[in-house]
Image (tube, rainbow, N blue to C red; front, side, top):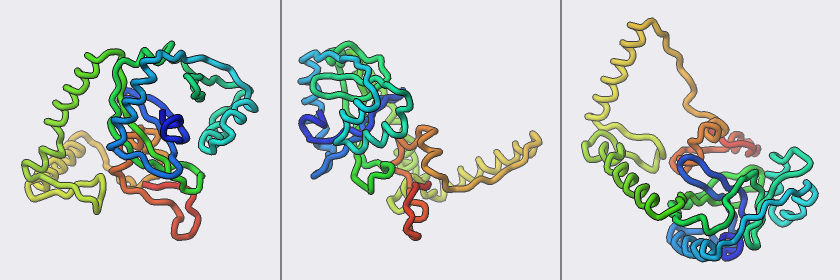
Length: 249
């Protein structure tokens, strides 16, 4: 849909226990949160067509020819495709790299919800804008409704809301991802720290101290980057020195 109707380049896609994501690049605009419903409607049209997913085995040369106009894909091919051949799937006019297996056709996607769109960092493409769409999909509408109900219950228990309501802490854009403790929250925090330290001593443990900033590679490996990168403070290593080769946290 992003390629056919938004004239975008799909960079990478994947799934996890929490849903799926798709990284993409639009040349002349950005996808907005208000656009997600339009994307969902376009996906629903493809679902209704029950387009088959066709599995193909291609050589590296054929793979590079397929994606010769997509620099993002070519970077991934260079980094991740090591064998003489690899598996791609075709659905309608779209071809993408995937180890599979995939469902037999697009009609299997009975219920889907796109959750958010955000900017993400991308390797060595010279700072070209890449966005990520997050979503969930289910084999039937009932499971989607169950998921939405669970999310509503989780929002009611959200510590960020509770902390604000009980005047424990607050968040600010001046330090994304970090909270500012108010007097009540600071008292609880220090009480817990004192208890933990007493338990360390009682059980014969010694303490260590680690850095407060890490390379984004750590957060990508742990899975945090996929879900929380928008709320993490980030900078590029050597940026002031003109290197700009990596991201740090």
